[in-house]
Length: 581
Image 1 (cartoon, rainbow, N blue to C red):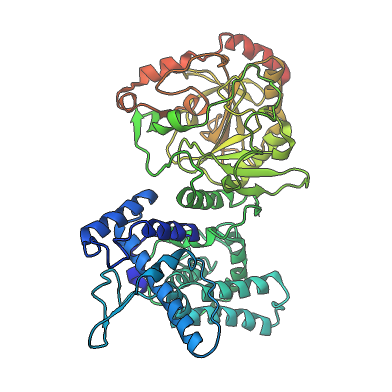
Image 2 (image 1 turned 30 degrees about the vertical axis):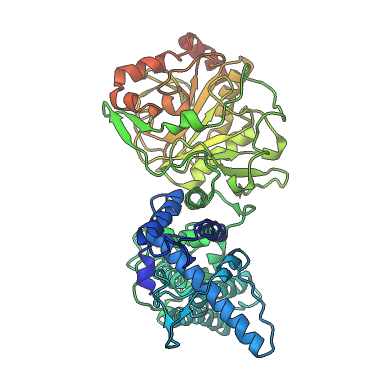
């Protein structure tokens, strides 16, 4: 049974179950034997496919059909228990979340008796003897999974008996929660989760030769999707206790297992910068797949590399379905609580809080509901303070700490100032996870003075700082940003991996480039229809709205559009900023 269900990459929430029941109720040809189309397989399949189409490519008509059969079986089981309890003079209480919604099924008999007194299954073509009800699947948890759950708890007890006081620690509580979770799951889910627990325990044992990255036990907490997996930490160095944890291989996708856990993640969960990106990716996928907060879905994006340099991604929905940008007229425009801001977003859009030393600061990660690419996220520093879209020194340190602490080379951080295509006047930074190389990573730079460099040959000149863990340069960078603010110079910021400016590795640290483009103001300027020139475009990464433009744009056209936003007095500006260093 486990392998059969594993082939269907579908996860049903309670809300989806309820929607399915309401959908079926309006189509009596599926459930009422007296309906003239009841025996028509084509009509039933058409209805199942219609519902599946609402939820994307992973959902099929067959999956909907099997789910409906499951729900009918569960309803019939409750009816039988009610009748049995009435005969015995007892009262059976139904707590199933679909019980009330399924009452329309009482209008018909689920099984019709034949003249011989035998049950006639033919009047219900969607019924499967092999398909257990939802309740049966949960209550008849696979014995092997139960054994695994019990063995996990035994391990904790064994550690406790070995002299480690576990019961009263957070690990003991978490261990019991893991066991409870497994026992509450259906056999299919429990088998998948148990298998992944075993895989993690073995793969990331620091002495295990299968460990490809030589991860140490304390690093694993930052890689796993849920903080209550911390219980496993105590097991990582006790491999001899894991011999009893074994199960047959079952066919499943790791992303599915992650989804099971991530659905339980609370909005107010606080994360640290280390390992933050994996958690963001996980939660982003869950919100993208299981909610309707996005204005459009990003399932696959067509890409094209122009002239072995510029990255084009086709995203036609962003220009037609995104929220209308706020009208910006001043680089230091004040925050307006009456306009859209991030205190007004749905709670479903909030992913995590970022841990802060200051209890008064509430830094949150939220999904960008009009994403440029997959995992496009917004970091909103001190969101409750309602700061305008102006870089503060505190927020600058926050994003640099995130970049350097996350240790993910695909992480890119961007900022659009007011009058530089910022669409919301409430402090926020864009978080991107992009594997493709971008041209700004390798552009040669020339020193201006001290830590400040400039691009030598690029359509739009930029200032550049080299940052590493040992040299984050927060103070030096903020001096330049502050200069722009005082002089009302619109600017875009992009922080990315990149070549070392001096051609040498600094202290063997990973090198990042902090890029700042001073630019012409975008206030009141009509943008090119194919794309808007903001931070991503300046980096060589273009979200193109038109299919025709996507296939036909050439490097020369891209560069010409970029040059339109070049500030006229860049050389003079270089001389002026020397005084800052």
